Image 1 (cartoon, rainbow, N blue to C red):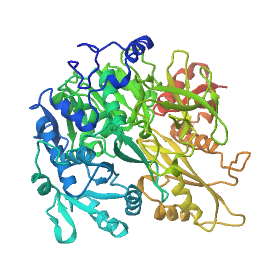
Image 2: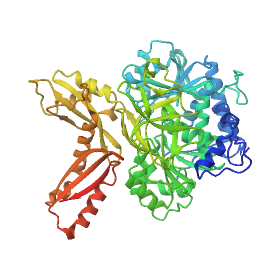
Image 3: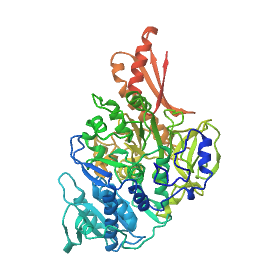
Image 4: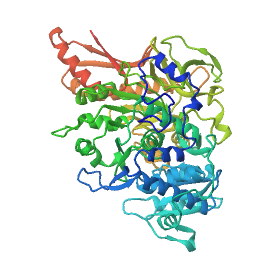
Length: 635
């Protein structure tokens, strides 16, 4: 076994170089199945613990302060708790094909539940911020047999939601309460008491978990009554940990500041599983994770205390890191920063590189690829704005699709098309067969719904989206339920929701409405209407604009690219308002670009030649935080 990877590379004691395509090809000469020492996530955690059983696996910080006294759980203790939790689920009747869902913030029991449920059956991590009716839809779609949820807790409404959801579920479901004694008479069990009663040295089920067994259902996108549940096998998830530990040359004992939610594959797999499988430690930044303002406020002192080698999170957190002064904190442990979930604005990437003096690694993937599928390899030339190359044993292509989604052929170098991906991390389909229509461009090649290009050196560049999801701070928002809410209003003829660029969140939902002939609405009427009917708070449009004519395609569908360009133009004009107030004449046009997907063109008039450099620098600084590139035209 490699000195630094728990997943056996069968290549000797040294981790190989990955400086070129030839280096990757050399690794791939050995069939992938011969590279893996763990068939399941349970095996991966067990092998990770063997590096140093007494070393910490979790350090939980109650308030995300560098002065916190952490709750420390060693690798031996973590494996024992996962085993006990799996046995607890087994005692409640959970078998390999039964589903355990959970609604939990970040706490030790959340991690025990995630991996214990996979050892006993199938786990279904659910976003506790969703509304009760959405939660009920997901639990119904998953066929949840056991629901683990946070009990009554000040500042949390999870238990209130559970009581509402329980009334809506049509099938038998056992509830296990974390942070409370339970109420056996009402069918509610106390988590800690049940777990403590179980043996910690073996799985009572006697189960041998196969790599092909289903490990998890992750919900993705929005919900419309038939939630999309992505089905992961143990092989899919173990591959994610293996690939990242290989490329990033992970060492046992390394620490990661952890604040991602576990219902997100980036948190549960790319960070949690990969770290635990390498014998590393997750420093958990309170129950709220990165949503706790203390986590970013104390960021550099946390780095100084816990000495992580990587700062990894969604772009909103990375942007906050750029803005946060380092002061006298010793941050020399950081070797690189990494981000994904949505595109890292180029200005943020440059800011991180300038502040830390380390490479900025952008990753790309989706729930359907078990998280990271491509990334900027640290040993290769880093091209800011690119998401790098596919990880070993995986492939990425740019394809042309017909109007019906049919495959028409591969794109040429630098030609924009739909990103398609294949490899050991790619799922084999959604739980509901209805959702599999159009999910694959060819067998084994998932349709990402994103637009991109591959340059002459094999670097992947994401240029836009063919699908309509709004990605707010790494959280996917499906426009359809919001649009359906608008259509319930008697005055609305057409409605469309798109992502408006935002310097902090990446995108915010922005709505356009065309009224029916002769109809009218009062100011604020549509905003109030949709606010009361939108499934989740994060999806409420930040603005509703009534337009005379909705842009349509030749077949009568709403042409959303034009709306996204308009939303971007509105944003950029608002950001540039300080220049307009000084009397500088400018206009912004956003449209398609053959290489970058979309580009904002800023037309500036009447500025003397000797003032243009200063004005241009000001515009560049104001627009730099946005993902969409911009160019300046003087006239």
